[in-house]
Structure formats: C-alpha cells, structure tokens
Length: 224
Length: 143
Length: 222
Image (tube, rainbow over all chains, first blue to last red; front, side):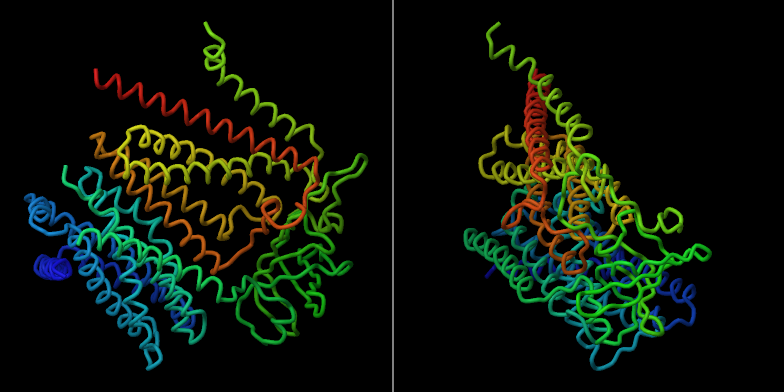
C-alpha cells in the first residue's frame, strides 16, 4: 500500500503548493463571482430563472477551474525537472497520477461548495436540508473532472502548445462530466428528476478514466 | 505490485461499463410526452410533446401566420397553436415533436414544430409527385 | 511492367471512377423517396460518410492499442491516417446531415444523441491530430497519440449514453434493426453500393496516406 501513501503525500504537496502560490483557484473564484453577479444583474427579479441557471453556471466555472488548476499543478511538477526526480524515486509512478486526481478532486470540491453557497446568496438558490445531497453530487462531479484532467494534462504537459492543447483535448472528454453534473444538480434543486442516473454517469466517467489512467499512465508520462 | 495495479485499472474500466449499461437498462428514458400523459399530469412547464397530426385539423391563419392543428396518440388528442411554421414534410398523419407548454383552455402553445421523420423510405412511382406541403397549399406561405 | 503494377498505379483513378458512378446513380438515376422527395438523396452521401467516419475511429483505437502493445511504427502511421480520413468523412456526414435536417426536421442542428456524439467525436479526433502536430519526436508522438487515441474512443459510449438519456429526436436505425428493412429495395441497393464504394475509397486513402508517411520518414532519416 506504499503507492496509496505516496499518492496521498503528493496530493498534500499539490494542495500546499496551491495554498501558498494561489496560482489557479483565485482566477476561477473571480470567474465564478463575475458569472453569478452578471447573470443576477441581467436576469433581474425572475427568481425561477435565476435558480434554474445556477447549475449551468457552476458547471462553466468548474470546467474553467479544472483546466487552469490541472495545468498549473502540472507546470509546477515540470519545473526544475522535479517530475523526472519523482519518476525515478517512486515505487510505481502511477502514484503521481493518483495523487493528482486526489488533489484536483479536493480543490474542485471545495470550489464547487463555495460556488453553491455564493449561488444561494446571489441567485436565491434555496439551500435546505434536502439540498445536502448537493454535497455528494459535487464530490462526484469533482472526482470525474479530476480524473479526466489529470490524465490529459500528463499528455500535453511537455508540449510547447500546452495552453492550446489542454482545453482542446479536455473539453470533448469533459462532456459527460459536465452534462451529468449539471443535470444532477438541477434534479436536486428541483426536488425531482433522475438524480441516481446522472450521479451514475459521473461515477462511471470517473471509474473509466482512473481505470484507463492506471493502464496507460506509464506510456503517457514516461520522461523523454 | 505493478501487475496488481494494472489489474485494478482493468477492473475499474469494467465497473464503469457495468454501471453505464446497468443504469441504461434500469431507467425509463422519456424523450417527450404523449398527449395522454401531458393532460393527465396537468403540467404547464415547458416540455416536449409527440403525436400524429390529426387529418383535416390543420388550419393556417394567413393574417397572423398562426398555425393550428390537433395531434393525437391514438387515445387522446390535444389542440396546438404555433407561430413557428414547420417544413414542407408537415402534413396530415405525420409525426411531430413540439417544444412548448400547455396554455389556457388545454391548448398546447408550441415554439417549435419539428417533423419527426419515420424510418420508412419508398421509391417514388412514375407519374407520382411528392405530396404538396399542407402549409403552402393552405396559403400560409412557405416556412 | 507487370499487371499488378499497372493495377496499383491506376487504383486511384478506379476508386475515383467508382465514387463518380455511385454519385451519378444516387443523385440522378435512382427514383426519389415518395414522401421526402429529392432531399432524401443526401442519404447516399450522408450514411456512407458517417459509416466510414465511425469505422476510421474504430481503427484508430485498435491501432493505438496495438501500438502500445507491439511498438510497430506501421500501426502508428495507420492510426494517424485513419484519424485524418475519419475527421474528413465525419465532417462531410455532419454537413450533409445538417442540410437534410433543415429540410425535414426544420432545423440545422438538434442536440440529439447521435448528432452530439458524432460532433464530440469530430472534436476529439481533431484534437488528436493537433496533439500529433505539436510533438516533434517520432516515438514520443506515437506513444502519446496512442494513449489519446484510446481515451477519445472510450469516451464515446459515455457521451452517447449521457446525451441519449438527455433527449432524442433521431429516427431508429433503418437497416441495422430486426426484421425486413423499411426501405424500398432499389433505394436499399443504391445505399449499399454507396457504402461499399465509400469504404473502398477509405481503404485507398488510408493506404496511400500510410505509404506517404513511410516515405516521409525514410527521407527524413537520410
């Protein structure tokens, strides 16, 4: 189980890095605040519409945060050949992938919870006892986005065009994650809808990409 | 160790497929509702409605460009008004998917009328012509 | 020159001729559909193009898995060639389907499962080509492209199911369904001929593209 321990240690390193450098999350928080604010101003007093737009806004911000955060953490690893050192030191380099999935999931999860609290303040989304279900839904969609992003970033991290390639390669793969996350959150807020179905889609996407990641990571990440 | 992790990877991929197929088989997916379902639910939120155009029910108000017709699912029929004009394939008996909501007096107000193409293809016979578009022939103008 | 050589040298002309023949019969000679009229003729381009697109992406996946397993440069060339041809044919399928959709459904685009899945596939394989473009080292490019070739393909069923559960407007399959196909036999024969000829064109294009890649690498090695 040394691999899991190593993965947790690497995830802790990622989170400490992000807390100290504040490289990626502030831009996502700024985008989130702007999105909620602009929508609230442009829609006006139509509470029903504001509430129904909230899941989609959270989805957009989540997609943006996934790309910037995954890119940033990967760039930190690549600097000073830290990645090559990690590759040589670890028992199984796949700990790097798992660690990245864990740290991305944790960061995106916290961000998403923050967005829901903001949405309740700015968009009149009512957070009641029933909407506690949003917590596991947010965790699932964060995990799903993280598992896709960690793997894709591994592929494009060494290319000179990483800033173009990262969103281009990520967005088609993030479609099920975004669709299921938004639909699940809508179902929770509406109090009805196929919640289990959408949660399962998020879960399936996470399982699939962690699974394929474990199978292909050594090919994708092997230092040149 | 390494092999066990790879086996875990395969297991996760398999589990993902099982979840997808399992959920797909167990959930009833509704693309649109039928007139019977919609009338029974008394729901006036935006929805999609599918039915066959009742022959002889299509009327076009040339002045306001409003199209009205009835659709049926075999047991129940609903009156529909629409400002959106469908394509030339719209005619008696054809299946249509409407997007809109139930308005007052149990009349469905459609924002969009899509002609749902059936999966039947037949060769045209010599001397036969493609049936004229109902909307055009009634003087409603081409869509 | 031996017969095989002549055959090979003129294979491109023959494939082009076959494509011309099915286009002429499909667009001019075969009778139109009784209810849709001439618009239905788009089917003879749309269906085979979509079929070739799906087939090409399947081969990209298989060749990618094969490359990761055996490390044969040939398989990498095959995956690259199929991705290029697949993107081209999928774009044709989407464009022709869109025109047909405007004429029959009444709109250019609908977020229907099959349309959305195909569009996402097109995006993913365009991204695949972009990834290849940006890596100079041959072996590294082959390895990373192979991993993404796998990712892009395993994503397809998840996209398809998630959009399927979201909404649908596309008609059920005409030929690939139990029982007698609900299509006139003459129209069906034309459709089958189109699919066969497009598949032939696919094989020819991929073979030539793989050959070109091999020559290019040989020249680069000199």
